Length: 411
Image (tube, rainbow, N blue to C red; front, side, top):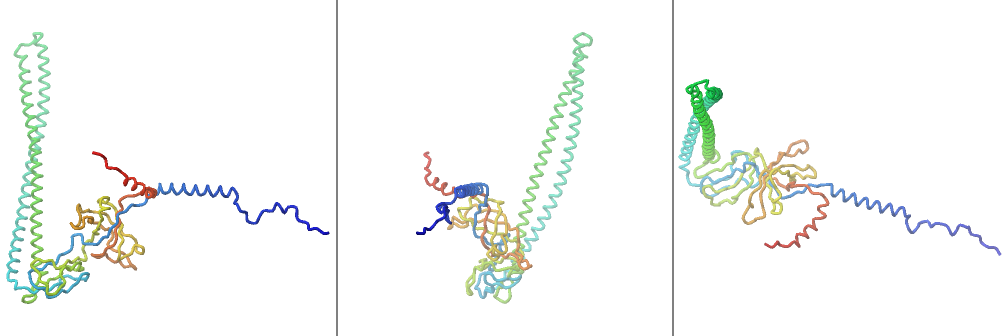
């Protein structure tokens, strides 16, 4: 009977797919994972990322908006512009029905008289200040000349005193030996005492002259500060009167009997309209709206929450993300913190604080054309308050847990 023969090495064949990987592959994979973990820990410890405090911001003019006020009480007949509308210089914004303004010319004349008086006062103060400066300079020159003369005199007297005392010492030796008489012996001593008294007197005069120079310089500095303060006060008063005069002459023009045209002081945009209803009764000086002039330098007004205000300080860099120009396409703009409010913006919201940011760019280039930033534009601002390592974020929950279980120290 025939038998089937099988190969001798059939029992030693290796399966096509082994159930367990080779030992060297497992060891290599373990080493690779350990190396990868160590590299991740080292990188997280070394790599620092910016830490930011963010909040919404709005662009506003640096010197503020121009308020539009009712020149006289009356009834609002027309509202020509709404919020966001562009306005030009002299364009009518509001029409107010009011009583005849017979006192307008008298008020304007009184303001012009005050401006003229202030101008003359500034001129007189400048002339008086110049004369005082010349007098102080002449007196200072004389005092310094006297001080130089006294210094030379003191130096001469000190030299004479040294010579006289040296001569007196020699006479003392001769008198002890009996070589000179008593009169000859006392003469240089008396001369030395006289020179010492004169030297002391000249030194006192020297100190008095130095004190006079210091007093004159301090007085001149005080007069200079007073002069500058007086000039500042007069300039501020004249500027206020000039603004009021220009408002009476240009911005507020009586178009027809009983009608007042309230016009825009500059070209820009109607940033805020506080009164929008026709027929509303307004009083003298009521705020009707605010105009942001187009050529004004802009700044960013940032609203900061209470959690982040403690870490913001002047001079820190800021990343500005404009809503009108998405940063994913047009890039991030930059600025720098200039001022932080010492208290909350309003009493009703104690968690809101203001910060003013100087912006570095004035616009965005789109398709080869520069698009300027406009008042009222906004977005999100991120203030860079420091840098932190990536690994510190992993320990943040542990730090919070530790602070949660911290006990109050006993007093």
